[in-house]
Image 1 (spheres, rainbow, N blue to C red):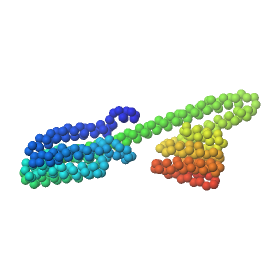
Image 2: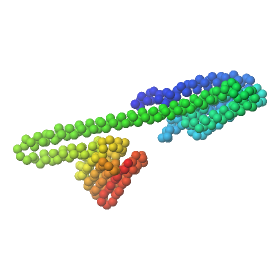
Image 3: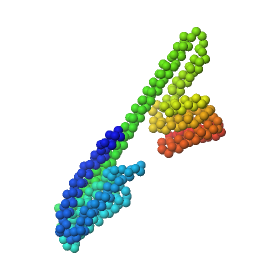
Image 4: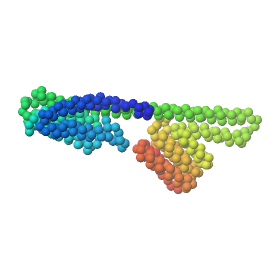
Length: 377
């Protein structure tokens, strides 16, 4: 899945490509129009700086790498823009339009038809796409106010004349197009989150199904390979079973009982730690009385916590239980002071990680008699 995602553009990039392509074509055409107006300009260098120069500065500001919420850098398109470059771009846009209106005027006055708005208006769309819609609105309103003020100052007819629509058209179109694209980006992110959640849920279900199948196969193997031959030996014996057979039957019974009682709390690591603890003489009891689908998202950290407790205890007895109601998990250990200190340190460290994730809360109690851990939702 990661290889496929790295080889082809993501859904967000694919949906942003029309906006990027249209913006590039528009800017190229408008740049030619700005260059064609330079020979008649009052200040050609100032006109060039307020059009192509401002476009270059806006482009540099608006394609700066954004930051995701996790703190990692991300691609520019669709990522949130920093507050400082966004504010600079929002202020530069109307200022460049006003300067351009003075620079391209034939005389020492302001023209009511500057060439910069058509070239610079895609910046409004980029501001909106990069999660700065408030600044895009403020900058767009300011640019429209500047253009209307220039029209009023020129006195070339009423504001509802076709020339006004010709001047305001590019600004309004890119302003609206930016809001549409921002909505498209937002809905795409929601779709991706839903898709990732559905994929994660399906993967978790497959994993749990596989674990149940493995547990069923393990119990079947215990019965067929260990229990049935021993029971046949007892059935075919003329007298009472040997002590060795009784010991083996007791061990098989304990293994089957542990598998049936442990259920969802058991995974390979918990089984290994439980077997190691039993080999040290610890009495281990892992019991799962919770509903089959209860607290699925908490099962991995709960198993890790139980495995850490089993790995740390050296003597005495330890019980890990998922009750049907109340706490999510309880762990109780009674043993020597050294064993209880080790278990207390292990469960306290895992409890901090579990609490830090915000998924649950954990309380650890320790005295001279026992170490008790309770995990609450």
